[in-house]
Length: 456
Image (tube, rainbow, N blue to C red; front, top):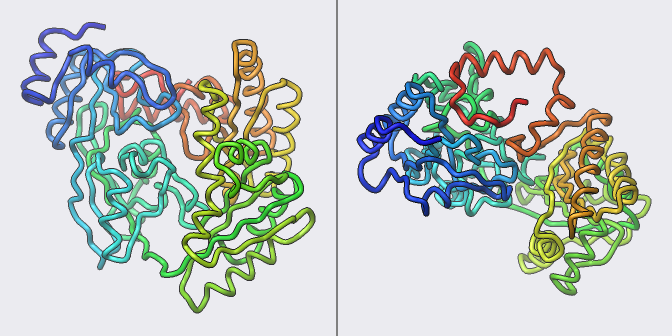
């Protein structure tokens, strides 16, 4: 698609010099995300205020040109790849924290604020925003909201949907609207806030978010448990989640992942059948009993060792295996297939064992780890050549079928984007998909908002 000269003129007027580009270098820089998929946009614009976003959408609707919102491109599903060309609108310059309000436990931010920057700004006030993706130093709040990106703390504190009070946005019609409240309770009409979160920019562009803050606990203890095999560790997860104390992180790492991390990260990484990383937070007078309760649940058939960190240095050492995983995987397969699936916690043992069987069946190396407290595992297929890539794709379809059979779903935090779009009918029945398409048509009647994503 080549943009009409009339639209280009409008874009230059809206955004001014230095904030609208059709040069090849800028187009290439915004053509891809962490999925490694790519497609060139026709133009890139850098929004700095709400009025510009509203004018952009109206102009693109008039010319029937796609609009693709972009944060920092850390998503792994191709959600920000401009597959039909059009205009990529980057929100990296809309990066102001507009308000921190401890009295009402909220913060108002623009979408380009980095997650890590927000956490640092909240710390002196004694609060934090719970969503904490692994990419938090680099990912934006707008991207977190668009994909409902979560992280380890979700097991106790919830995802962006549970931690966002309200939004300001521009629909695909070009109309601005606000949804949600500035209060922790609200029962007024449809919940458009939760609808927009996770919609991957297919309905509206978020220009402001009112976030629900949580007081930062004063104490944190880290535990590491190693097990004879993956099944023992998976059953331990179910026991931990069945007792009253909720950990603030409960991470699962299988034996293949441990060996990779050990080879890459050194002796601090144990070799075992599987490992759980557990964190418990709270106040000093309640923390010891909470640690005891979680430790008791972690003990059971197949436990080899349970360690509790006593210092920050020990905590860092215990987490070394998890941190070494991503670089270790890249040394084996630059074309790794990174999926995040989720099942009910009680079905986790079946999922882990089923993935092991599929790995053997298709002769594909699979590394499994992730946020086990939510039943959310990252299933990483590591093909090393063309033949393995072909087998990996066949294996992936069976992984998804297994997940659905276990009453799970396709994604816990990465979203659908381009990569999982074809599998949506596995997870969502036709009548529900039709309702989703009707919602899409109401927000975006001309189909200009991030086309080719999410809905099959």
